[in-house]
Length: 353
Ligand code: NAP
Ligand code: ZN
Image (cartoon, rainbow, N blue to C red; front, side, top):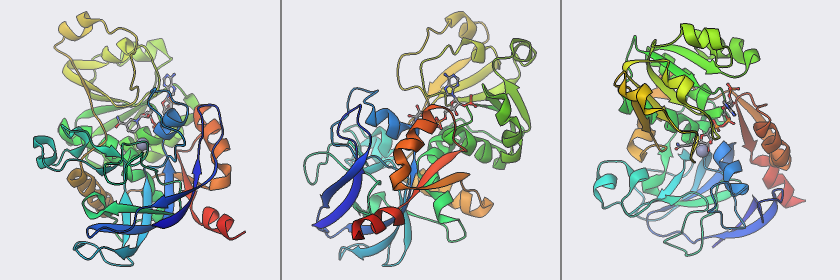
């Protein structure tokens, strides 16, 4: 067992605070990772606040993990001591069902194990995530990080990156397609970069006029203010594809009107009931609605390699773990540019005090 320093929430209303836990001893196919950086996803906040009514406390969030291999089990073949690696939203699945065999572990028919707050099939209890100084993960759920990428900026690729990459690939976005990204936060800013690198014409659809310049710097060709009714009207029927990252209940009908005939809007943000969708808007133009959950291990590696080739990382604000509660407040106030990443040195130093 490895004594591990972490930050945890003990209830939906508490702030995160220091916590000690034990990581399991290494099995033959396990890797012990010294965590260097961990991104702060809006899902961490939803989980801490029990927005999805499934949180087991204490919860240690964090599923955008970058670290260094410091020990490995005897049967680990793809990784060596000293390798820089990543861990995303999953640490286990049945690895045997049709979804797992298709490289879609996130849709495992027997349920995947989340990196945190997941039922731990190996050690019992619930998994603890990346707001910690080390983690033990079986090699099949560990990713290789391209050497040229900035490590702190690469952390958000493990969730924000793959969650936006997977639908863009699955719906076959290609050069020249008109893609709209709804919501310029952690997911949205990665989506702009990835869709732009795929050659799409990208429009940022935002509620925040002050984010327009950033959107263009990130790779958007145009910016559409969703609160501007005239602009929304002028943009009607002009998009092939929309990726909706809005993290809360909302009215999606005004966005559906933006789609061309046969266009598709994919939801990744609001994991909850939203305002009713008017089916006439879909039927009248054979428009489609879809949804998507993170991405499989194979496609996560493909996304990371693509980011290596195109030198794509996240725009981050690096914080010490002691500032995590303020960071949560700022995400909720829509004040993040565009992902907080925790420098885990701050936790390691704390443990020596
Ligand atoms: P985030 O950084 O907080 O960004 C969300 C953005 O949505 C905001 O920056 C804002 O952009 C816009 N927004 C916020 N409230 C809004 C409202 N009431 N109406 C319209 N737009 C609003 O969050 P994130 O980390 O990108 O995560 C987004 C959502 O995806 C979360 O709910 C998270 O749990 C979920 N998620 C899903 C998956 C999956 O697998 N499907 C994976 C990871 C995360 P503007 O200022 O530009 O409007
Ligand atoms: Zn996430």
